[in-house]
Length: 243
Length: 99
Image 1 (cartoon, helix red, strand yellow):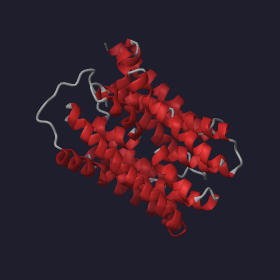
Image 2 (cartoon, chains in turn purple, yellow):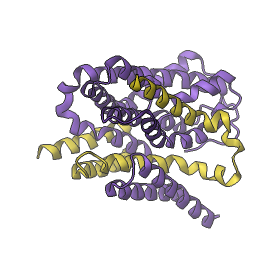
Image 3 (tube, rainbow over the protein chains, first blue to last red):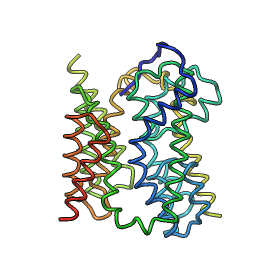
Image 4 (cartoon, chains in turn red, blue):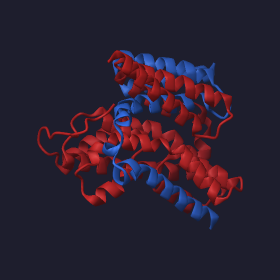
């Protein structure tokens, strides 16, 4: 799930058409994970009266579904700007960890890319990039990441807009569709947990997060942060003993 | 106006979180122990996100989701296909909701 500190170039530089084709093919399964959440966010925009234009514009601007959903429900409940922004910061704090893992891919990139392109970091793009071992060339990565992030943002925005207009029609399937994100992430995670530290990291994080979530005493997003930290710490301990 | 400012603030804080360890303080400059922990970030965070999605629904823990997760994990482990594993998991949840 990680890349080395230095990324030697292997093979030829990917053209835009090759990088774009690979990115679009890769994103197919993860759209399954985006679809239910996008529709629910759209439905919530319609129900809370946030304003369709502002709500839909927030989709590519925030580019994080759970945080967007939290923002909408908090605004509807009368929460102030400070509360909303603090809540979004807690829910999205996990993105800091994804960014740290992906950072070697951004070294040696143009300044504009290092400041703007991290905007595309989210579960789906993180999983897809860390699953590939052929993105070591800086130009190829830049083209792949730009296409992947842009295409996913367009898809995400379209799904949210669809949810605004057609959400009530799709509401009957919502209980089943709500399982889709977990299913997609699980099917991507399982084949990649191939060693003991990885298994310990995933198992500990899952159990701790599950227990804290069921307990219900913590704000949204916090169980994930605590669970992930516990999983990482457990894996470091296991690895330390092995070596 | 409150909604507009909140959206702008949420977008800004999320962007800051994303650039923090890439552009502001590149992860390569972090202390050694932190860098050695990075390979475990992926499995840990994804498992945490999955667990929260499985048991954090508005109606509490849905047994159909837990059964669907078992089926999804088993198919993913045996076949390694994201689409097949997801379809089997969703099918399980749909079937259990119909029963």
